[in-house]
Length: 146
Image (tube, rainbow, N blue to C red):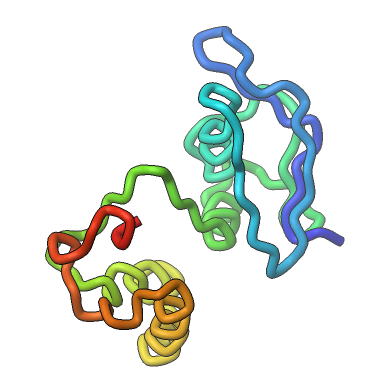
């Protein structure tokens, strides 16, 4: 059983079909990047998965069970397994790099702050930002913010 799966997923804006029968699977623990040219539907897939845009066809399954996007609990369950990073980096200007990385897991997923901070420190070190933990966005370059 896959962690997240789409089957023949379709979506449209103002009658214009922007996703046409998209199917894919994501295994538990996998990190997935959606990469493609502008207008290819990357953001639309994320909007559909997170319940911001209703699909016009197909289905989304979480842990093998169909997601009912009219059911708030189902939408919340899907949102809890998605982490969306867009090209624009909209950081909280009043928070440090470490705080920006840890705010969602602590506030949204209700994870233990110390555990999340320990993971975040390791991840930031891994990408060469160990010396920026206490830096605010305006103290970092655009690349460091991203």
